[in-house]
Image 1 (spheres, one colour):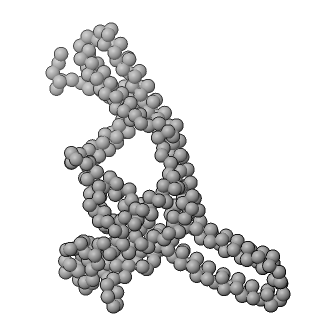
Image 2: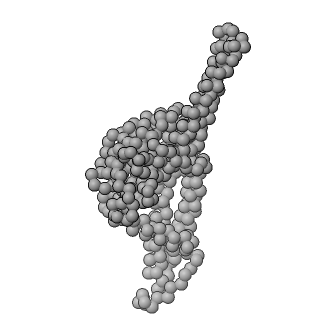
Image 3: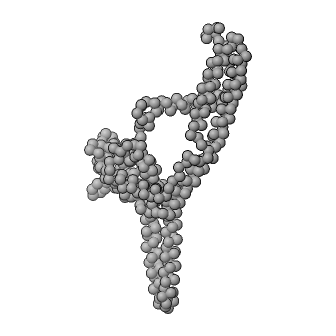
Length: 340
Protein backbone atom coordinates (compact mmCIF):
# COMPACT_ATOMS: atom_id res chain seq x y z
CA UNK A 1 0.00 0.00 0.00
CA UNK A 2 1.27 3.49 -0.88
CA UNK A 3 2.43 5.85 1.85
CA UNK A 4 -0.24 8.27 3.09
CA UNK A 5 1.49 11.27 1.51
CA UNK A 6 0.98 9.62 -1.91
CA UNK A 7 -2.74 9.01 -1.48
CA UNK A 8 -5.12 10.75 -3.89
CA UNK A 9 -8.27 11.87 -2.12
CA UNK A 10 -11.39 12.71 -4.12
CA UNK A 11 -14.55 14.29 -2.73
CA UNK A 12 -17.57 12.05 -3.42
CA UNK A 13 -20.96 13.68 -2.77
CA UNK A 14 -22.68 10.28 -2.92
CA UNK A 15 -20.97 9.34 0.34
CA UNK A 16 -22.11 12.49 2.19
CA UNK A 17 -24.33 11.77 5.16
CA UNK A 18 -25.35 15.38 5.63
CA UNK A 19 -24.59 18.39 3.42
CA UNK A 20 -20.96 19.42 3.83
CA UNK A 21 -21.76 23.02 4.80
CA UNK A 22 -24.13 21.82 7.53
CA UNK A 23 -21.56 19.34 8.85
CA UNK A 24 -18.92 22.08 9.04
CA UNK A 25 -21.28 24.40 10.89
CA UNK A 26 -22.10 21.67 13.39
CA UNK A 27 -18.43 20.92 14.03
CA UNK A 28 -17.71 24.63 14.43
CA UNK A 29 -20.51 24.90 16.98
CA UNK A 30 -19.25 21.84 18.86
CA UNK A 31 -15.77 23.34 19.07
CA UNK A 32 -17.18 26.63 20.35
CA UNK A 33 -19.18 24.86 23.06
CA UNK A 34 -16.17 22.80 24.07
CA UNK A 35 -14.03 25.93 24.30
CA UNK A 36 -16.61 27.66 26.49
CA UNK A 37 -17.71 24.88 28.83
CA UNK A 38 -14.71 22.58 28.86
CA UNK A 39 -12.56 24.79 31.08
CA UNK A 40 -13.83 23.40 34.36
CA UNK A 41 -14.25 19.87 35.66
CA UNK A 42 -16.73 20.76 38.41
CA UNK A 43 -19.58 22.68 36.79
CA UNK A 44 -19.25 23.61 33.11
CA UNK A 45 -21.77 26.45 33.52
CA UNK A 46 -19.23 28.32 35.65
CA UNK A 47 -17.50 29.24 32.40
CA UNK A 48 -20.38 31.47 31.43
CA UNK A 49 -19.63 33.68 34.46
CA UNK A 50 -23.25 33.96 35.52
CA UNK A 51 -24.09 36.90 37.81
CA UNK A 52 -23.34 36.29 41.48
CA UNK A 53 -25.85 38.89 42.67
CA UNK A 54 -29.48 39.42 41.76
CA UNK A 55 -29.00 42.83 40.12
CA UNK A 56 -25.54 42.37 38.66
CA UNK A 57 -25.05 44.17 35.31
CA UNK A 58 -28.42 45.92 35.68
CA UNK A 59 -27.43 48.96 37.73
CA UNK A 60 -26.71 52.35 36.19
CA UNK A 61 -25.58 55.69 37.62
CA UNK A 62 -28.09 58.47 36.91
CA UNK A 63 -25.34 61.09 36.87
CA UNK A 64 -22.84 59.68 34.38
CA UNK A 65 -24.54 56.61 32.91
CA UNK A 66 -21.78 54.35 34.19
CA UNK A 67 -22.30 51.12 36.05
CA UNK A 68 -22.96 50.72 39.73
CA UNK A 69 -20.82 47.85 41.03
CA UNK A 70 -20.06 46.25 44.39
CA UNK A 71 -17.46 48.20 46.35
CA UNK A 72 -16.10 47.47 49.81
CA UNK A 73 -18.37 46.04 52.52
CA UNK A 74 -21.07 44.83 50.14
CA UNK A 75 -22.08 48.31 49.00
CA UNK A 76 -22.87 49.40 45.46
CA UNK A 77 -21.30 52.58 44.15
CA UNK A 78 -20.62 54.32 40.84
CA UNK A 79 -17.60 52.69 39.23
CA UNK A 80 -16.62 55.86 37.35
CA UNK A 81 -16.60 57.86 40.58
CA UNK A 82 -14.48 55.21 42.27
CA UNK A 83 -12.02 55.19 39.38
CA UNK A 84 -11.93 59.02 39.24
CA UNK A 85 -13.33 59.18 35.71
CA UNK A 86 -15.26 62.44 36.05
CA UNK A 87 -18.40 61.44 37.99
CA UNK A 88 -19.16 63.23 41.27
CA UNK A 89 -21.86 60.78 42.42
CA UNK A 90 -20.41 59.51 45.68
CA UNK A 91 -23.63 57.97 47.05
CA UNK A 92 -23.56 54.27 47.81
CA UNK A 93 -26.22 51.76 48.87
CA UNK A 94 -25.87 48.39 50.55
CA UNK A 95 -26.56 45.41 48.33
CA UNK A 96 -29.09 44.03 50.81
CA UNK A 97 -31.02 47.31 50.99
CA UNK A 98 -31.03 47.67 47.21
CA UNK A 99 -32.28 44.14 46.59
CA UNK A 100 -34.94 44.42 49.30
CA UNK A 101 -36.32 47.65 47.82
CA UNK A 102 -36.55 46.11 44.35
CA UNK A 103 -38.04 42.79 45.48
CA UNK A 104 -40.65 44.48 47.66
CA UNK A 105 -41.78 46.41 44.60
CA UNK A 106 -43.27 43.25 43.12
CA UNK A 107 -47.01 43.71 43.75
CA UNK A 108 -49.18 41.01 45.31
CA UNK A 109 -51.58 41.41 42.39
CA UNK A 110 -48.98 39.70 40.21
CA UNK A 111 -49.89 36.52 42.08
CA UNK A 112 -53.65 36.87 41.82
CA UNK A 113 -55.61 33.84 40.65
CA UNK A 114 -56.78 35.48 37.44
CA UNK A 115 -53.33 36.77 36.59
CA UNK A 116 -51.54 33.49 37.17
CA UNK A 117 -54.22 31.43 35.44
CA UNK A 118 -53.85 33.44 32.24
CA UNK A 119 -50.07 33.51 32.49
CA UNK A 120 -49.63 29.79 33.19
CA UNK A 121 -52.07 28.92 30.39
CA UNK A 122 -49.97 30.93 27.95
CA UNK A 123 -46.72 29.33 29.12
CA UNK A 124 -48.19 25.82 28.89
CA UNK A 125 -49.50 26.45 25.37
CA UNK A 126 -46.05 27.58 24.27
CA UNK A 127 -44.45 24.49 25.80
CA UNK A 128 -46.90 22.18 24.07
CA UNK A 129 -46.34 23.99 20.76
CA UNK A 130 -42.63 23.30 21.04
CA UNK A 131 -43.41 19.58 20.74
CA UNK A 132 -44.34 20.04 17.07
CA UNK A 133 -40.88 21.43 16.36
CA UNK A 134 -39.35 18.41 18.03
CA UNK A 135 -41.33 16.10 15.78
CA UNK A 136 -39.87 17.60 12.61
CA UNK A 137 -36.39 17.59 14.13
CA UNK A 138 -36.74 13.92 15.04
CA UNK A 139 -37.93 13.03 11.53
CA UNK A 140 -34.92 14.81 9.98
CA UNK A 141 -32.51 12.92 12.25
CA UNK A 142 -34.15 9.60 11.42
CA UNK A 143 -33.77 10.30 7.68
CA UNK A 144 -30.08 11.07 8.12
CA UNK A 145 -29.58 7.90 10.18
CA UNK A 146 -31.27 5.86 7.46
CA UNK A 147 -28.89 7.30 4.86
CA UNK A 148 -25.88 6.49 7.03
CA UNK A 149 -27.05 2.95 7.63
CA UNK A 150 -27.45 2.40 3.89
CA UNK A 151 -23.91 3.64 3.25
CA UNK A 152 -22.60 1.41 6.06
CA UNK A 153 -24.29 -1.57 4.44
CA UNK A 154 -22.86 -0.76 1.00
CA UNK A 155 -19.37 -0.25 2.41
CA UNK A 156 -19.51 -3.49 4.42
CA UNK A 157 -20.60 -5.42 1.34
CA UNK A 158 -17.72 -3.96 -0.68
CA UNK A 159 -15.26 -5.07 2.00
CA UNK A 160 -16.83 -8.53 2.19
CA UNK A 161 -16.62 -8.93 -1.61
CA UNK A 162 -12.95 -7.96 -1.57
CA UNK A 163 -11.72 -4.62 -2.79
CA UNK A 164 -8.05 -5.31 -3.24
CA UNK A 165 -5.82 -2.43 -2.26
CA UNK A 166 -8.90 -0.36 -1.34
CA UNK A 167 -9.88 -2.55 1.62
CA UNK A 168 -7.97 -0.45 4.16
CA UNK A 169 -9.54 2.75 2.87
CA UNK A 170 -13.01 1.22 2.98
CA UNK A 171 -12.40 -0.08 6.49
CA UNK A 172 -11.44 3.40 7.67
CA UNK A 173 -14.48 4.82 5.92
CA UNK A 174 -16.70 2.22 7.64
CA UNK A 175 -15.38 3.29 11.03
CA UNK A 176 -16.12 6.92 10.24
CA UNK A 177 -19.65 6.10 9.10
CA UNK A 178 -20.33 4.06 12.22
CA UNK A 179 -19.15 6.95 14.40
CA UNK A 180 -21.42 9.35 12.52
CA UNK A 181 -24.28 6.92 12.96
CA UNK A 182 -23.64 6.80 16.71
CA UNK A 183 -23.48 10.61 16.92
CA UNK A 184 -26.80 10.99 15.13
CA UNK A 185 -28.50 8.38 17.28
CA UNK A 186 -27.19 10.09 20.37
CA UNK A 187 -29.06 13.22 19.35
CA UNK A 188 -32.30 11.23 19.41
CA UNK A 189 -31.86 10.25 23.04
CA UNK A 190 -34.46 12.07 25.13
CA UNK A 191 -35.95 13.78 22.05
CA UNK A 192 -39.57 12.71 22.35
CA UNK A 193 -42.27 14.04 20.05
CA UNK A 194 -45.31 13.01 22.10
CA UNK A 195 -44.91 15.71 24.74
CA UNK A 196 -44.32 13.18 27.52
CA UNK A 197 -41.27 15.06 28.74
CA UNK A 198 -42.87 18.51 28.68
CA UNK A 199 -43.40 19.68 32.26
CA UNK A 200 -46.43 21.96 32.53
CA UNK A 201 -46.58 24.86 34.96
CA UNK A 202 -48.93 24.55 37.93
CA UNK A 203 -50.73 27.75 38.89
CA UNK A 204 -50.91 26.82 42.58
CA UNK A 205 -47.24 25.88 42.74
CA UNK A 206 -46.15 29.03 40.91
CA UNK A 207 -48.14 31.23 43.30
CA UNK A 208 -46.70 29.73 46.49
CA UNK A 209 -43.18 29.15 45.26
CA UNK A 210 -42.75 32.54 43.61
CA UNK A 211 -44.03 34.51 46.59
CA UNK A 212 -41.94 32.43 49.01
CA UNK A 213 -38.88 32.89 46.80
CA UNK A 214 -39.31 36.67 46.75
CA UNK A 215 -39.63 36.80 50.53
CA UNK A 216 -36.58 34.57 50.91
CA UNK A 217 -34.47 36.59 48.50
CA UNK A 218 -35.36 39.77 50.40
CA UNK A 219 -34.02 38.38 53.68
CA UNK A 220 -31.35 35.78 52.82
CA UNK A 221 -27.95 36.30 51.22
CA UNK A 222 -28.74 34.50 47.95
CA UNK A 223 -25.16 34.81 46.71
CA UNK A 224 -24.29 31.93 49.04
CA UNK A 225 -27.12 29.68 47.85
CA UNK A 226 -26.40 26.81 45.44
CA UNK A 227 -26.71 28.29 41.90
CA UNK A 228 -28.69 25.23 40.81
CA UNK A 229 -31.59 26.36 43.03
CA UNK A 230 -30.96 30.10 42.96
CA UNK A 231 -30.53 30.81 39.25
CA UNK A 232 -34.08 29.91 38.08
CA UNK A 233 -35.50 32.55 40.43
CA UNK A 234 -32.79 35.02 39.46
CA UNK A 235 -33.75 34.53 35.82
CA UNK A 236 -37.42 35.10 36.59
CA UNK A 237 -36.77 38.35 38.45
CA UNK A 238 -34.18 39.60 35.98
CA UNK A 239 -36.60 38.99 33.14
CA UNK A 240 -38.88 41.59 34.70
CA UNK A 241 -36.17 44.21 35.20
CA UNK A 242 -34.30 45.79 32.31
CA UNK A 243 -32.21 48.03 34.56
CA UNK A 244 -32.28 50.07 37.75
CA UNK A 245 -31.02 53.65 37.61
CA UNK A 246 -29.57 54.92 40.89
CA UNK A 247 -29.63 58.67 41.59
CA UNK A 248 -28.51 60.72 44.61
CA UNK A 249 -31.46 61.79 46.74
CA UNK A 250 -31.37 65.57 47.42
CA UNK A 251 -31.57 64.91 51.16
CA UNK A 252 -30.09 61.51 51.91
CA UNK A 253 -29.44 58.13 50.33
CA UNK A 254 -30.44 57.28 46.77
CA UNK A 255 -33.54 57.13 44.61
CA UNK A 256 -34.22 54.11 42.40
CA UNK A 257 -35.85 54.13 38.97
CA UNK A 258 -36.84 50.74 37.57
CA UNK A 259 -36.98 50.14 33.81
CA UNK A 260 -38.70 47.16 32.20
CA UNK A 261 -41.88 45.06 32.45
CA UNK A 262 -42.06 45.38 36.25
CA UNK A 263 -42.12 49.17 35.88
CA UNK A 264 -44.99 48.89 33.39
CA UNK A 265 -46.96 46.73 35.81
CA UNK A 266 -46.35 49.12 38.72
CA UNK A 267 -47.41 52.07 36.56
CA UNK A 268 -50.55 50.14 35.56
CA UNK A 269 -51.39 49.46 39.21
CA UNK A 270 -50.89 53.08 40.09
CA UNK A 271 -53.17 54.08 37.22
CA UNK A 272 -55.83 51.60 38.37
CA UNK A 273 -55.72 52.94 41.94
CA UNK A 274 -56.40 56.44 40.66
CA UNK A 275 -59.10 55.16 38.31
CA UNK A 276 -60.73 53.19 41.13
CA UNK A 277 -60.80 56.29 43.32
CA UNK A 278 -62.35 58.32 40.48
CA UNK A 279 -65.00 55.67 39.78
CA UNK A 280 -65.85 55.36 43.48
CA UNK A 281 -66.45 59.09 43.73
CA UNK A 282 -68.56 58.97 40.56
CA UNK A 283 -70.74 56.15 41.91
CA UNK A 284 -71.15 57.93 45.25
CA UNK A 285 -72.36 61.04 43.46
CA UNK A 286 -74.74 58.96 41.32
CA UNK A 287 -76.10 57.27 44.44
CA UNK A 288 -76.85 60.59 46.15
CA UNK A 289 -78.49 62.00 43.01
CA UNK A 290 -80.71 58.94 42.56
CA UNK A 291 -81.69 58.99 46.22
CA UNK A 292 -82.72 62.65 45.92
CA UNK A 293 -84.69 61.80 42.78
CA UNK A 294 -86.54 59.07 44.64
CA UNK A 295 -85.21 56.28 42.44
CA UNK A 296 -83.83 54.13 45.27
CA UNK A 297 -86.83 53.87 47.60
CA UNK A 298 -86.71 50.18 48.44
CA UNK A 299 -84.00 47.87 49.75
CA UNK A 300 -84.23 45.85 46.54
CA UNK A 301 -83.58 48.92 44.35
CA UNK A 302 -80.62 49.92 46.50
CA UNK A 303 -79.23 46.37 46.44
CA UNK A 304 -79.56 46.26 42.65
CA UNK A 305 -77.64 49.55 42.38
CA UNK A 306 -74.82 48.29 44.63
CA UNK A 307 -74.63 45.01 42.70
CA UNK A 308 -74.31 46.89 39.39
CA UNK A 309 -71.58 49.15 40.78
CA UNK A 310 -69.58 46.21 42.15
CA UNK A 311 -69.90 44.33 38.86
CA UNK A 312 -68.65 47.32 36.87
CA UNK A 313 -65.73 47.87 39.23
CA UNK A 314 -64.80 44.18 39.05
CA UNK A 315 -64.95 44.21 35.25
CA UNK A 316 -62.62 47.20 35.03
CA UNK A 317 -60.28 45.69 37.62
CA UNK A 318 -60.02 42.48 35.57
CA UNK A 319 -59.20 44.56 32.49
CA UNK A 320 -56.21 46.03 34.31
CA UNK A 321 -55.15 42.54 35.46
CA UNK A 322 -55.25 41.28 31.88
CA UNK A 323 -53.05 44.21 30.92
CA UNK A 324 -50.50 43.06 33.51
CA UNK A 325 -50.56 39.55 32.06
CA UNK A 326 -49.93 40.97 28.59
CA UNK A 327 -46.95 42.91 29.91
CA UNK A 328 -45.42 39.83 31.57
CA UNK A 329 -46.01 37.79 28.41
CA UNK A 330 -44.24 40.44 26.35
CA UNK A 331 -47.20 41.38 24.17
CA UNK A 332 -45.56 44.32 22.39
CA UNK A 333 -45.49 46.80 25.29
CA UNK A 334 -42.70 49.33 25.46
CA UNK A 335 -40.80 49.05 28.79
CA UNK A 336 -41.79 51.85 31.16
CA UNK A 337 -40.05 53.40 34.14
CA UNK A 338 -41.18 53.58 37.75
CA UNK A 339 -39.66 55.37 40.73
CA UNK A 340 -39.42 53.43 44.00
